[in-house]
Amino acid sequence: MQYLTSLDALFLHRDEPETPRHIASLAILDPGETPLDYDSLIKVINDRIDLVPRYRQIPRKVPGGLGLPVWTDDDHFDMSLHVRRSALPKPGTREALNDLVSRLIARPLDHDRPLWELYLIEGLEGGQNALLFKSHQALVDGSHTVDLAQVLLEETTRARDIPHDEWAPRPKPSSLGVLTDSVVSHVKNPKEFLAAGEFQLERLTTKVQSLSTDATQHGPLSAHLSRNRRFTTVQVPLEQLRLVRGEHEGTVNDVILAAIAGGLRGWMLTRAEPVTAKTSFKAMVPMSVTRDSDNNGGLPTSLGPKVRGMLLTLPVGEANAVVRLHQVSYALKGHRETGSAVAANKLAELPGFATSTFHAVGARVAAAQVHRGFQVVITNVPGPQEPVYMAGQRVAEVYPAIPLTGRRPLSIGVTSYNGSVYFGIVADREAVPDVEVLAQCITEAIEELVDTVGRKKSRAPRGKKPTK
Picture 1 (cartoon, rainbow, N blue to C red):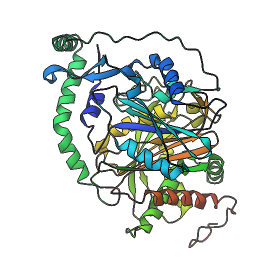
Picture 2: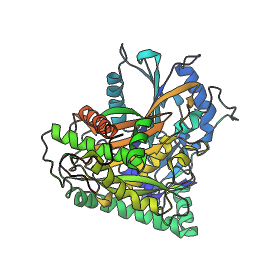
Picture 3: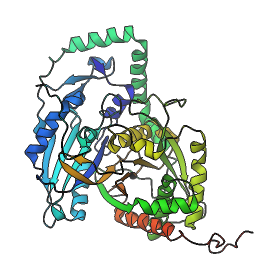
Picture 4: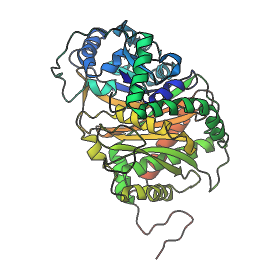
């Protein structure tokens, strides 16, 4: 039997209506020569699901809680319960799409079925379709199981021939069998016993830790979460961010994080929130590091690089965009100088690379480090700069949707793909009803940085004299 890790079991335990523990990704597909319909999508997934056996399994608790839950085959597995169809009312605007995605990502997954869903969304303007993937954090760990989007990706419109066997569920073990196997497994492997004990202890202390951590949070990025979400997006040309990087050095990631800091500043000002020179927010920014780095917090590494949580102070109080960028670059300089940081182009070139799996692993890292007292999660994953395809359709855009946890009403996922950078912004519907304003402020913060490109080096920021 394959047991859940203590971290996966904790994700299941923390899955509540206000904090559903799934990660999502939205892929916009251009219409191909052969239109994508529901039946053809089902066929593609049936041909590929053998590659990810856990997508047909459910977590089963050990009687009496004497061990970690175990993965067992779903003997009533029904693909139609997981692959669903939806359509937008005409004219199929992006606003209507974002509203639908907001509702879908707010719905928790059913623990009595395999922990994933895929929605085919039809009726977008221009004849486009969309695929919305939802996978539980306990399901996608980047090691035993990758995100379903990664399994569907192709480099051409022609799908690979993948051997496919008829599937039949393995007999469900009896409660006594599960309990006996758990006890025997723990005796043979004391580490599993300790992991189970850690899980039970964590269950008892989770509420206390949550209250003690949340008590220190305040301001617009701290709120009791509701059961409803808002989702919106931002798209900018990658070349613009590269121009800013070339002008001011650093990395494209630095530019993105500085733009988010500037966007948060502008958003707070529109709300008449107090903003001073010292105003800042702590962001958890998962970063990829090489395999030989010292510690990975017990997370799997089969994707290639490890992922480590970096705590970054976003300089929201800094009024000057260039100074803000330099502050972010300096804060992340130590990570780059360790020699363990992975270049963006190396990540994008990984075989079978899918940004959704890396976002899932990044979100796991953030969820495992809630004790560090951050206020927002920001994942940034570089993707391929050539077109990729799903079910014979060209992927035009891709947006991540990172789950909300604790008292954090905002999360931001960023993906670069085929010449553009895509921001997926998830917010609590009640705490951040103006998330579209934040998206506009991030766009304006990027434009502000782009406007600095080409200025003379001797020209100082307003209010400061040039240095000699």
